Image 1 (cartoon, rainbow over the protein chains, first blue to last red):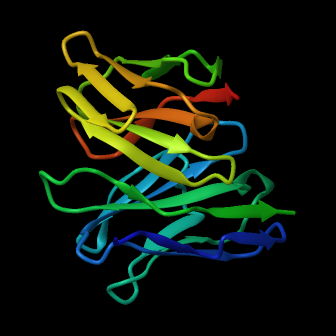
Image 2: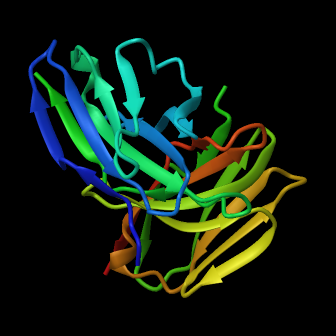
Length: 114
Length: 109
């Protein structure tokens, strides 16, 4: 059964460093999402991506964040200069064209900023 | 104000009990997800529904669009059902998900 994959499963970085979180969506899906979950809090929407551009982003998704689909299979989230408060679980999700609106989630990347 | 409210926040049950988790929302939606999150953190979609009722094994999900309310039921609960259950709505105007805070379920043997 096709699934969304994410790498790495856990990333530890120093404050101020750049990190890239990688996702491989389900192959025939065209809509991609990043969500994050700070420990003990609810999952929050970060950004949605379709047709090689951002379709919507939240207030959290500031200039330190960027997304890219570099090669037609990977979907990446870059944080340019990490802050302590970026420590969270980051989930990638993808879905197909309507009416197939169900989102499928990757296993998540746990980011720890020291 | 939270757009998606879940109750209860925590629930402890004995194995075999019938469990109900509720979700109310205040925004226009096109559909609603029920998700399961295990202690390792991964999220699995259990159901997506926009009307009526869906059943998968011992899990049943219902939604009442007019009342803006959904319920997740687990029949004959088992310790392996212990997890966090999250309600997430798909906004009418976009397809992003807005999440509830989750219900932490513990089923004791």
